[in-house]
Structure formats: structure tokens, C-alpha cells
Image (cartoon, rainbow, N blue to C red; front, side, top):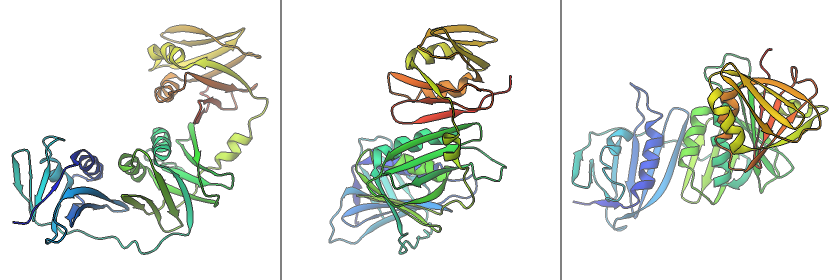
Length: 345
């Protein structure tokens, strides 16, 4: 019996887990694994999919070994990330576990069309940008804008701006782009979450995009998705509209600590005379800051603390304006910024 063994079960589990999260209760999109010297893992959903190459123990001169099954069936065989994942036609084995698989059909995706717009970024940077922006993607949004998508906007400055908003919070995470082509595309939140999960930790990633397809490729894999149709808010107008802006610097850990007891409440923030005071129904707390002007802002403490949970920088910069009731509060670390629209007083 011709068999193949995939030894990198950790990477295989990551790919299978990403595919499983996209399966519904009734509709399941199967994964196809083909071993012909290397293991090729293929998955295509309704509007996005991926393929990746993993090392395996298989004689390249022997017949191919292939299995097609729902991701959950494959995952049930991975009892240990240290045990080899052995495949034969329609059968999987791992660490003493063995299962015969039913035959499933796999629908291939024709990716002969290569979109014309291009950006080249680091995989780790793209992962971090997606992880940050997915926190503020809208769910079941009913507005005229496509807020349930992540916007990728390449400009001529050598940056790829990754942006999202739920209409109350805007997240911007610019990353270095080795190309200077100008384009904008929208990726559905589920597709963006899948991409963030399967991206490698480092290395160059090339993004090809047009109005019909987004194709993202790296050394041992690629991801495709159909871009979301519709408009994304003109986020640059929000940034450029800021006037009379001043800033204060606060310690990230200290600010997160004083917000933690107030997570379930609306919180008023007042900056005056070298102090930032946070006040809610549950109490108040104060930290020292340097501020040239007094400032007052009202927001949900949970939204600000949620952003701080993903900040590695020792300090963050808080930007305020003279009329906070009409303008957003901006908090920026070394890599990204988040704008919070004020709550009504």
C-alpha cells in the first residue's frame, strides 16, 4: 500500500483549523491533501480558499497519495503534534489512531488569472495588521458602507494601509510596502481571519489585486478571495479633519490597569493639570500625564482597554482636540492607531 507521512503536524493542524472555522452546520467544504514528494494541502470555500506545501516522507517516483475529507475528520486523527500524520488513499493514521474516510468531491479553483495591482509586504507585518483591524470590523452591518470588511489600500508612499471600522472605532495599521502601486481592495472579515491564521511568521508576501480577485502568495503557499463589492468610508478625511490637536503620553500598563475595573461601564476621561482621570459608576482612578491643555472625553472603557491589550509598546500617545464632543479621540502606539468616536454626554 502506497503511503505518505506528514511530519510537520503543527503546521497541518493550523491549516485544518482555519478551514474548519469556515464550515457551517450543514455546508462543509472539504480539504484535499495530495502527496507527490511534498504534501499539498488544498481548501476552497465559497468565496475564499488557500493552498500550502508541507514536507512529507513520500517517494516522489511512487503513485500520488491523496485524501479528501472535511477538516474536522482530518483533525480527529491528529492526537499529538509530535506524531507523524500518515495517509494512504482514503485512510488516515496518527499515533495509533486509524480511520477510513468516505469519498468526497473537491472543487478546484481556476487561478490562471493574475490581478494587475501588486504590493509586497512582510508576512509578520500583514498578520499583525489583520489581527489589529479584525478587532474593529463590523458584524451584520446594515449601512451603505461595507464595514464588515478589512480595507487594503496601497499608496505611492511605500505603505500598505490596513484599515477597518465599525462606525464607532477606526483602526489604521500601516505596513511597509516594497511596491508603490496605488490600489484599494476590500477583504471580507471571514476571509481576512482565515488569511491571518495561515500566514507564515515571516518572509515576503506578494499581494495581487483587482476588482475580481485578490491573490496573496508566499514561498510555500497562497490564498485567494473574491473582493467585497461596495464602498469603504473615506477614512483619510477623518484623519485630515483633525484640528487644534494636542497629545499626552501615558504608560500602557498603568492605563490598562486603571481601566480594567471599569470595563462594563461608560467612562469619562478628563485630562487637566498633569493628570488623566477616568471616572465611571464603579469609581475613579488617576494617572500622571503631561498635558498642555485640559481635555474631556467619554468612551466605553472596554473598547480602549481592548486596544491596549494588543499593544506591546511601553507607552501610548493620546491625541485630543479642543472640541472632543464632535471629534474622535486617537490613541497611537509605535505601529498602529485607533480612533474612538465620543459617546453622548
